[in-house]
Image 1 (spheres, rainbow, N blue to C red):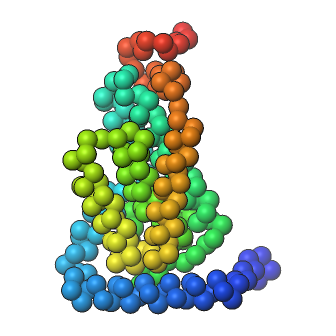
Image 2 (image 1 turned 90 degrees about the vertical axis):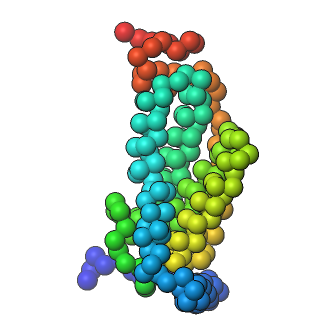
Length: 215
């Protein structure tokens, strides 16, 4: 067809790397599923998938801001929300540009999948979980006892993405690296308390000290 997009040329070295990635991913899934049957654990993988879905995190975080309505938390809430949006946008742009297909064994039953989400590189779940862990360990550290469950959750997210055959191994590795880079970037542009008060004051019924209101 005249309007059909021309097939993209892939460098031989990159093609070999991608083929190796596909082989290793398939071998990893086969090996692990010998000991952990996919059918028995798929419900847990799906729960992990939902627990790191970008849309649910955005909606949940907005609800958290609204319900908590705590000016002293505005800075943390705003910076985290900006980081979430940044992650979703960057992942979508890269997926749309790279257009790497998901593994052949992937079943297209993922919740709220659209547009660039049809592609697999990089893993948005991996980048988001890595960003969340980085944020709450480096930028806004939670108590140390929260670290093990956070790390276990993020690690489980990454492994489950491969075992569900949503992503190849390189997709997940790239996602983790991207999430850490996003966290580092948020550390550089970290918004001040006054800026966050101004941004979120419209969500509050009470006056925030230092924020400006226009009637």
